[in-house]
Image (cartoon, rainbow, N blue to C red; front, side, top):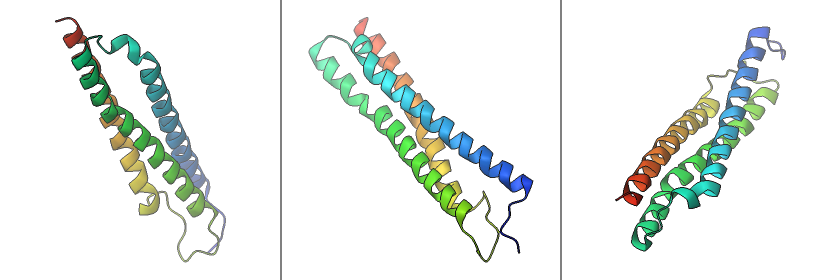
Length: 128
């Protein structure tokens, strides 16, 4: 067995790395934008303001969890990529990499969808 990656393996690892970085960056931008712009879509009514601010914790925590899973996936990707003399060749389908990536994707979509729901809810409440 050689320690060299085939061109196909190299492309797979490069694509995975790029995908993880892009999703992590996207989560960070969505989180930061929603925090900065929250004063515009949180209603002024006191009881409703507290409710919407509390509901915003769901998407914010989901997006931050997605970033955390992305960082974990990158660290594990680096560990698998740099391991030499392993009994089997490194694979992008290794559970140590695929599990955090799957969790990152799920957390991202939960955060994105719940942010849209909370924003629409806040808009409906503020117009009533």
